[in-house]
Amino acid sequence: MNAIIFSAVWGIVMMFSGVLSNNKKTIQATAIVGLILLFIVNLLDLGGNHFINIDLHNMLYFETFGLLFNAIAFGASLLYFLLSSSDILKVGVNGAEYFALIFFVLCGVSIVTSFNTLLMLFLGIEIISIPLYILTGADKRDLKSNEASLKYFLMGAFSTGLMLLGITFLYGATANGSFFLDDIAAAKTSLSPLYIIGLLLLLVSMSFKVSAAPFHFWTPDVYDGAPTVFTSFMATIVKAAVFIAFIRLFGDAFGDTIQRWQIFVAIIIAATLFIGNITAVFQQSVKRMLAYSSIAQAGFMLFALLTLNTFAKEGIILYTAAYSIATIGIFAVLIKMKDYSFEGFNGLAKHHPTIAAVTTIFLLSLAGIPLTAGFFAKYYMLAAALQTGKFLWLVIFAVLCAAISVYYYFRIIQAMYFKEGEPQVLETTLSFRVVLIVLSIIIILLGIFPQWLINQIYYLYL
Amino acid sequence: MPINYYIFLAVALFCIGVAGVLTRRNAIIIFMCVELMLNAVNLLLVAFSKMHHLALAKVDPNAGINGQIFVFFIMVVAAAEVSVGLAIIVMMYRNTHSIDVNFLNRLKH
Image (cartoon, rainbow over all chains, first blue to last red; front, side, top):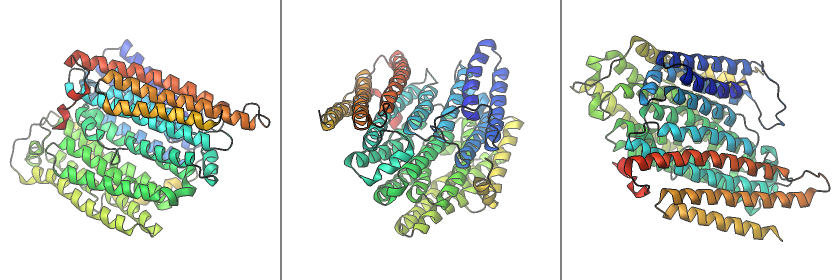
């Protein structure tokens, strides 16, 4: 609860900071201080210190799983701000407003990790989406940014419509007319057509939001067209948060009927992994390749939805942390490159050895090489599927797809280390490089001691 | 009237909206079709709300009120979406002097 109130309030503070000060340093510092406070406030929430006690009528339900994910999301946002806040200010003239919108998105993130009724799910998803439409179009003069924003907006509004129809059908199917997840879970006994159609519509619309195939077609265009700093935010923290919402929704409301919809999720996973990985191989631009790679990674994260067991819950926390940190790091490096194609990375290792080394660690983690966080993240996902004993074919397919993904991640490493060239890199500060090294240390530590993060789920703070 | 009539009407309106979104090329018309989808949902929510109220009014005089509250939230969110969406369309128009979504193909390659 602390995080929801604080992030909304600090969003307004950010808007006023833009009015009161024209100094970019002040705005940047206000944003970073706000995020540090948000992180601390959320940890206090996790420890049981609530500032304000409001009767929520059980509409929000706080548990360690959601609050722990909030901590990951805020921590990742903090690293993102430390790396890229100066680039955010460079996008346009309204620097303070971009930070304000990011704080509003984080407010939505903390709602979707704690909803207990479909009303809050809907509001949380919309509070996340609407600021993102604006951020995507933040570069007003750039036609690509305009186009991405319009496309994202139309697709987002369309999938919201589908989600609302699904919610309405489920409302009609409940016995006592309520949106609470418990009442929807209780409606399964009837298995009326309303319930089944509602469930499928929610599955489709949430797949839209997490860009799972065959509902992924907007993703590459939007991620490619949006200003790179905001692509980084969208592809990591926001996507991970929507995944947590997806898993909470299906775990709490439809967990008992899992046998009936599991096969649909399995097909979605197979399609997502296949399309994401195969298309990523053929990309010429690193930014577009990362967009397809985010689709492919979504395929792995969907394994948690397929199984919904303890392995899955532990794994999705680790996966979101590993994936967010590695992708934020790669995007931060990409923003500093002048040429976004693979050739742009040629010879980076010779001229900027630190940046090349940390980028290699991020890429290895995304590919799932042992000793990085990405390996255990993928391991937990596949272990969860093996535990159900039904989806051996899907696990084998996923391993093959992970092998394909090594190809396109290693293309960058190959360009950096084994090709000659003069990479065009914008100037980087010492603190930028230090934060990048911190990111890579976190990834390696999570790769060696994944239990440390996972045990936090079971540590009873509340 | 049985609830099925309302469901058929709302689903028909919703499908008109979906068909519009998928086939029309003018961004404003697509936008109107999205609004039609949302309003079809509103209609259905109110119908279900009344259905639940009739079924449970003896037990709980407030039964079914949730659906109507949800409708208000959908209206508010739709208004917020309109303000952002129209701003995006205006921004698009300023740069290209067109709101035809067929122009949206610069990103394909």
